[in-house]
Image (cartoon, rainbow, N blue to C red):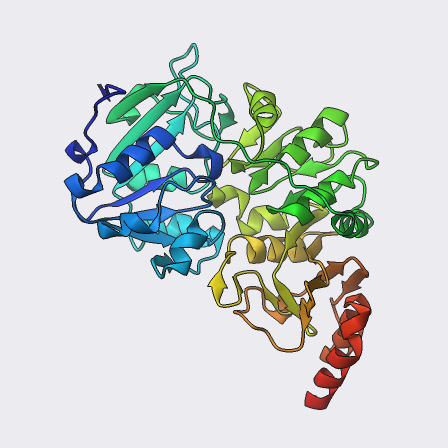
Length: 418
């Protein structure tokens, strides 16, 4: 049986050793009382490493680097301060590769910290707000410590846990972290409307994180019989399910179910998913699997980017030398949509950032998605379908969706080089 921790006085050094790598659920799934205690007790433990996902709370700060090394697949949220301080080691990894890296030991995980929902009548605990890469981590770790939070939603997933799964339990009763809804600008809504025009009734959609994917969901209100298969389940998905737009009735797999890996949204979303059998939480070994995605008819991937060049190369990682995004699942989902019968791979972004064009002739950061996988690029000026086009043809299409103030310069730069 697991040790039940005293909320006012518990010592994590009993389980966590110097040299260990610790992982926890990302975004709102973070078991905050455990992670905050870990940082407070870091000197007692010795030097160890933490693997970070999306960080919605500033649990880990530069001052903690006196005893902690930080590795992350993403530079968003509180991770940005670690990167600016030169303290974040970035793992440039496709999301679909994370499970195998963990299972193989190439990304060694020694300790898992979880936030789980209390056991149901059958005595089974729910992973609540995140499954994704936690499942392979649970299979690989030496130690599992769980925050059993009375306010965490009990969600259906591919696995529940028995009490024997835990080495220690901390019982809490606190509101989980929340993610405020995006404040959509008119420009975001313009882009969302263009995206909605590319989505057929009966499609299954995947959405990324941020204002553009949120705007796309907000623009789908007049559609019918949509499905969801995504890394993220958000408030926008909830609203479409409530309205009946998303009913998953025409999915070839997981019919009737919205499938996701992590919940990122508000308290209302947590309430909506609690014991809701229409939502299924799965690991990234399933949500991002190429064969699974290819088998979903009319699979539409909707992701954003930092910049796209005139040939269709996409950078979703670095801006101004700072790692702010991720390799993440963008290429996984883009390739899945390319292989899907009737699939639509979409990358969307505003045409400018301030006075700078985000449609470029030369990338300022890494190529996250190569031009060989280019699909449809969307800005507020429309959509450029690059599939089947030559480089020159792509450039002409991309110029049509660039900001008018930059089109002449971009055209001159590109055609002077080819």
